[in-house]
Length: 91
Image (cartoon, rainbow, N blue to C red):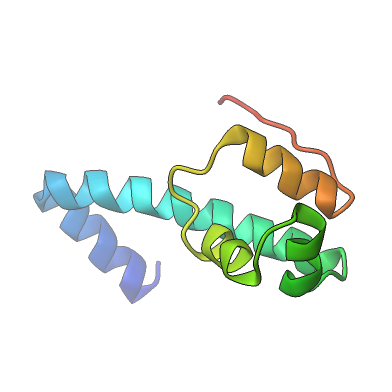
């Protein structure tokens, strides 16, 4: 286990508020990373994606870097614009 993981686990064990905020923040971060990776793998720039979504590059950047409170309809449009489809899983 890395030093960072050890620190996070120890901090989560002693600080319930940190644990709650960390977990929700991490999930939002992962969504943004997944969206960015999918866009890059599709060979599409933020500028091109923004054009396809009829929005600005800053909006695409905000989606990729701050994916909190993103609408399902926005995720669907994002996926369609990069030639993918959105699949949800409840585990």
